[in-house]
Length: 319
Image (cartoon, rainbow, N blue to C red):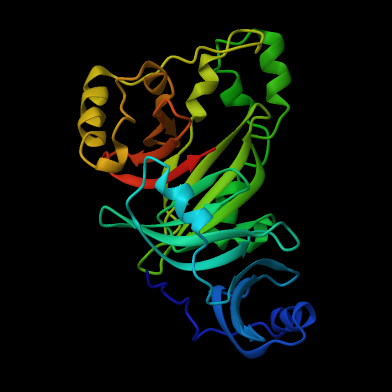
């Protein structure tokens, strides 16, 4: 799978370049490219016989990937072949450190049923998504300015909305009304196969639970988490109704969608607990869907669809 390069015609931060040399003083053949203008950069370089890439902001190295030309270990091949998603073609073995100083994990490109994925391996788990690379950010300022503005405009209390939550009693509403509508909780930036990016931003919502928002390459909001589930809690916020809010028509439509690709075999909505974890989400005029589909063996797909029933994000995990 070929990874599209970031825009290298923009200015590379010399400070970010120095951070790479401080971490890797023996780096050779270093080249840089811009991921987010003035904020986030990618550097490629060699250390001895190994090839590295590093994602760097203006204060730290965010993540690194290392390739040394080794064959994919049989142990990793066997782990994939023992999963429901077996049968794909494996290539480009490397190790990835998602956070600088964090434990590195092996990863491979994985082509399955005509679709390209990246599979990364934990000690006893597999995580797979259809993105050539991704990186996690902890600082909101590493996001594009329009997304920062969207989050910060909501980083304050919203008592007018809270007072519409008639499922809560007055005491609970007064308590929630003091919380900011949004508190930034981190973001994952995914590179798509065409080189564009998708921004997955997590927020703490009204101090009650964590939700996510997806923004596309033009910073449009294309998917929202289950913000509307706040209306399912009982009056003292001690529990909520977890029943699906999908209509029969929506259930029928998505049953047909999941019945087509073979890698969704045995992950259908006909399994009761899958349906109960499937929701229509609504926030800021955006409608979308989320599905947590389990096959009864602990393997799980997390699927996000937009209002047009088109998939905008997917990931597979196996414990």
